[in-house]
Length: 286
Image 1 (spheres, helix red, strand yellow):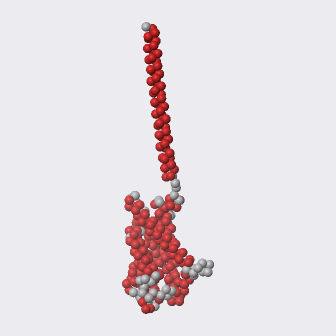
Image 2 (tube, rainbow, N blue to C red):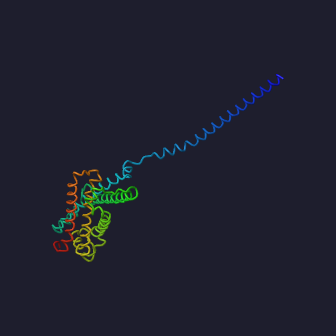
């Protein structure tokens, strides 16, 4: 009897140990399988994470922000303001006669000649101006989208909006009209596509003075130049005002100085440019 009990006890202990061993082996198998599965899944995730950490160039990263777009608007605006001013000053030679204006046009073609081939520097400047224009347009369009869909705050600050209310309201439309005027101006006096009222109905390259007279002697064209330059002045006024805000130089203590600068700059450009069609139509320049 005792022997039988001992046998049963040994069998029971063997079963327990067998169960424990099987549980341990199953647990080991599960752990090994799970760890291998996790290890196999971690590699692609890690590789993907590393791939997404690539940084863009600093300038592109800055331009992707609203602040960066405002910087581009301001810098490109300054470049184009300088061009508009010096272009107007150069065209004032029209009042000095045909020889003076044609000589000025030839001088532009010979910038840095003979260090650079004739006309190359002028085309480089034109390329830079076109680049500034495209950046200005893209930044303006991008900021409009950001202001419309991302936040309720407009591009202009509330204080500046009160100061330049009409100019800021019409900024988009004056910009579109000024762009149309620029395209017409190039077709009219640079390429001569829409200026065929000269001798034998042909545009003569190099005869800048005569081409200007032929163009502005048309009352409709002269009126368009006047209206377009008035709208250019409105655009310049708000642009000159908001440049300081875009660059962060918008201390209220300088508002009077900013307003004076914007008004003076826009007035000088408008008066100079508008005087050309009026002088031609009135017969002052002929």
